[in-house]
Image (cartoon, rainbow, N blue to C red; front, top):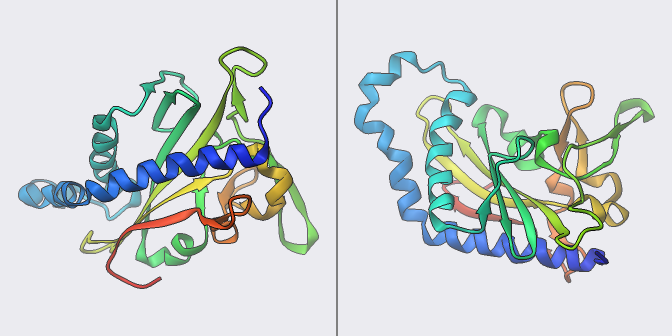
Length: 228
């Protein structure tokens, strides 16, 4: 498969727009879904520990149900990959949801944690004191490399900023993390050191535009109750 960096970005932008417009169209259903927890609040509130993992579990059900219901592509059962993993005509698509509390708003406005199973961006992480660290993700640049059915691997993230105490959702965004074939274009800007050795964050504030597509946006807000 001979594919240029620009063609990779064209695919990334194509599906970013598809998911953005679908979720924007389904915004009312999504917000109604997020509020359904209130109907049975007395049955779960005493067990809620105000943790991100607790909140994300409920939020994921809503977002993933909408995306699964749209029927985009064939779900793939590979054990390595994101929470949602589809095959479409011209790509394999990974989608994950990330939730951040307002206490950690800096994480939401600059970078988000990404797992090795969620991206294909092999690169160098710049650390303090001039140190660097090689980052090796678990996803390939392309699936079925060298075969007839070779297709590009795409990674997307739906991010939710919410209030810790009230669980009110303040901002919802969607973004695309560059495929590893674009390392020659973006270099080390895509990656930022995580809290632990070998872990990384997607430094999206440094790559907010598709640079090979005349600066088309790479991060879109679906819903916002605050300016950030």
